[in-house]
Amino acid sequence: MLQTYWHPMPAMPAEDVIGKLIVLEGTDGVGRSTQIELLKNSLESSGLAVYDTGLTRSNLAGRDLQQAKEGHTMGAITQALYYATDFADRLLNEMIPALRAGYVVLTDRYIYSLMARAIVRGADPRWIRHVYGFAVVPDLVLYLQADLQTLIPRVLSSGGFDYWESGADYIHGDSRYDCFVQHQDALLGIFSQMVEEYAFVVVNANRSVKEVAHDVRRYVGEAVADIQSGAGGLPLVEGEFSRPLARGGHPSSRTVSDIIADLLSTLQDQ
Amino acid sequence: MRPITGMPGKLFVVEGIDGSGKSTQISLLYKWLLSQMYSVFYSEWNSSELVKRTTSRGKRKRLLTPTTFSLIHATDFADRCEQNIMPPLKAGAVVMADRYAFTAFARDVARGCHPQWVRELYTFAVKPTVAFYFRVPLEVALDRILSGRPELKWYEAGMDLGLSDDPYKSFELFQGRILQEYDKMVDEFGFEVIDATQPIADQQAQVREIVSKHLDGCLKRPEGMRRIVADLEGKEG
Image 1 (tube, each protein chain N blue to C red):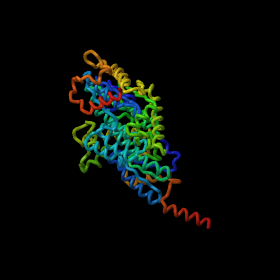
Image 2 (cartoon, chains in turn red, cyan):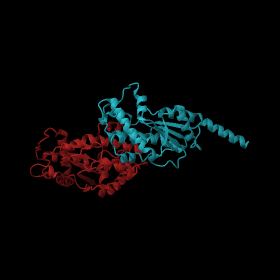
Image 3 (cartoon, rainbow over the protein chains, first blue to last red):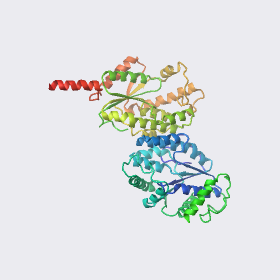
Image 4 (cartoon, rainbow over the protein chains, first blue to last red):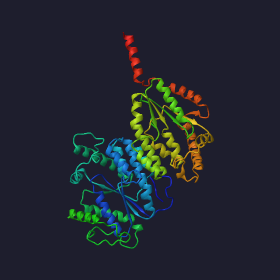
């Protein structure tokens, strides 16, 4: 049965679900999307059906929330609740049905990022924990942890310091760099307080993509072991990128851009 | 909810099931306070421009679950609090709200959300100076609403709960549940209960009597300000 942090939502399924909910958390620039892409490929190649999702993609509120952000007019509490609406919609209409259907649900961030963002903007930590009390407790939360010294060059090389990633909506300063450092530092502080409370598995993301992927795969392999048919478990990272992807259920899901992304990450590794 | 102490303004809210006549009462109160030269702000449930599109799409396409229904209304309310309710209260004005957090406590719990969770969502809101509850028996309210056989909207009729295939029957059952939730809140939140079967003028007289006890020191409109200034100058001269 799906466990929740506090009172469950009405209409939560009461029966056991066979799928697994796996969360990748971490601040901006830590490499979550790269790791999710790699993990998705390896899970699918080992025959598991994967459903991947991320923040502000809900059918209900995703687009409006993006537009509201562009207007920059929301107060902290309004913003926190709008994100919670989007999250609840995805949880109930996407993640839970996928879990019931036996998918491995991979989510790029979860309530922890949403809570941290609200807290740095002044929301009461106790309040925001209760707001998200309906969230399903994941089978595994991998927290990709990197120092600011690692994050800064990565963020710079991928287009510089974005308005929201720098917390420029609530930190006022002349330098976007200073805002970024202050904002990310505050987020890292809040994440470190959550490690124990939410049983994060900490992965050192100061290392190369390949090393991180190796650890990610090992932890996820343990988490999905009981739903994997046949022997073997997840293939290790060595040789992963060159091997033809013999996948059971999803032959069409690998696109040209997937292949290019893999190639690029392999090149970056070398 | 947070206490209103520390803010010079006053907040009056009206609550009750559909057909209780609360909107009529608050609009009469509004006109009276204006005639008394008070600086009055009026805020309606479900009126934030920011989330309007999400709410109306959710309702039109029936995308809302009890939880997202609750959260999107809380978002709407938070936006109104931050933009329209708190600033005038801090400035010392009178703020009036047609429906407040209690509407969510009644309606979302009737939809199956946990009472503690819904109350927790709204802890950022300030507790009103007075919350009027217009209590009316279910049959009276239903008769007022349904006698013209209006077209009931999906969520308004509580059709999402699957209580009945007939919208009118569903509406009756849903409003019955909401009424029970309101009755439970009378002591919890210290509602001022007004018997909403009385003539409109009698109810309004009771409302004004209660409100008038709380208006000391509230901000007056500029015309009023000018008169005060004139008085002061007169004394000096």
